[in-house]
Amino acid sequence: MGRGLIPEAGQTPNKGGAMGRLWKVQVRGSAPEPFKYHVTFVWDESGARLTPLLAANLYAEGDLAVYLEDFGADRRDISTLLDSLEGTRDGEIVVRPSEELLEVLWAS
Image (cartoon, rainbow, N blue to C red):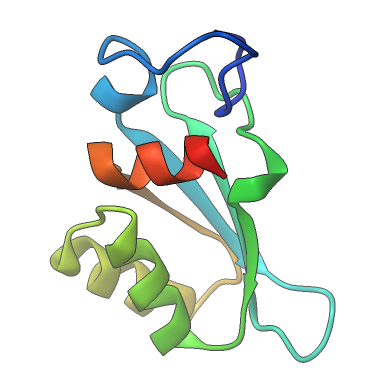
C-alpha cells in the first residue's frame, strides 16, 4: 500500500496499516466563503497527507463536531478543540477511524 489512504489496485487494507493507527486532523480557518473551517487528515507519526478525499470545508462548529465524531474523535477532545478555535483559527485533534468507515472509504 502506498502512503495515501486508498490502496493500489489489487491491494487490500490491512490492520497493520491505517486501520491500526491514530490520525491527526488539522483544522484551519477556511478561505472560501461561506465555509468557516478547512479540515485535513494526516498520519500522526509521519505527517504525510492523506488523499484529498479526506479534506473538507465545513460551515460551522456543529458541522465540524459531527464530522470529527464520525471519524472517531472523542467528544471531550472535540469540545476542547472547539474551545481553542474561539481564540485561534488553527487547531489539531487525534481521531481513530473505525474499521467500517475505512472500508467504506476504500470502496469509494
